[in-house]
Length: 349
Ligand SMILES: [Zn+2]
Image 1 (cartoon, rainbow, N blue to C red):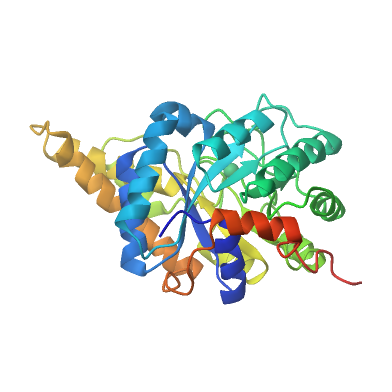
Image 2: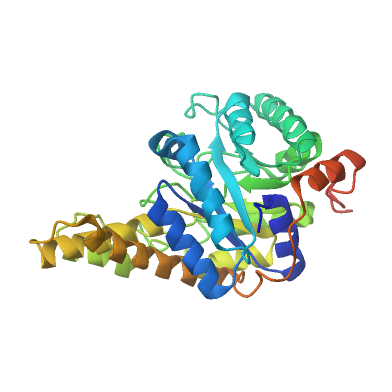
């Protein structure tokens, strides 16, 4: 299938009542792992790249790998998404390259570290929305600030420092016209999210539910939503790693989110853990090996297993053949004539 927009994937997910995993990539093996998992489970999927990934892989390599994925898996609806764009220019360059959706993370200033004001966030996000929609490309915004740091992006600190205010979320959605909205409910980027199994004091699912009640048709996005399972941590440590004990977002909390408007779930750390564990195992068990394929193959297989599991848990499995791609040109028409305006935006009181 040609690359589709995240907006179409998420509209379909809302109709079907499921969530779609958005998995981060830096290289070919990760893209291969995701596509094989999508094929195995018959899932639509979002593949996303951060600024760090674009720098690491170079834009043209990434883009052509994504085109190869679309070509090799014509049955899979696939969106290519920019994760945490830090400025209008970053989003613009991704759109020019061929990304089918972008995130404008205006919750932080362009340095990717300092929290921005609400007005600054609205202004830059609206500018990206106008530019993107004219070209048929969808936009994710963020209101509230996630905790932690990923690929050098983030304010650091706890996920509870700047949780989303529901009134601001409503105003932000109204003024920017974003297709989807990332909210801060206590989650953080990276492996070290929580120091114990999270409960309502640190993971604010009640806040998510309150926002969904006010914005019933807005696709909500959960960032920092790796579950950081103990078995993946254990494999790394068993083979010489030194991870400190940590907790992620339990899958059942994500599933509760999906019942309450969450349509996109960002997962990166779990895949990183799976890859590293598999590689360490080969290095420790067979130190005589030196062909990169000897460890990249099990690493890719380990990531595929985690991705397939998440696809099943999020409910996207089995939904790849529900629909055909809407062209980017037709998406642009839909934005221009108002058919793609989110309705009803704000719930009647
Ligand atoms: Zn994120």
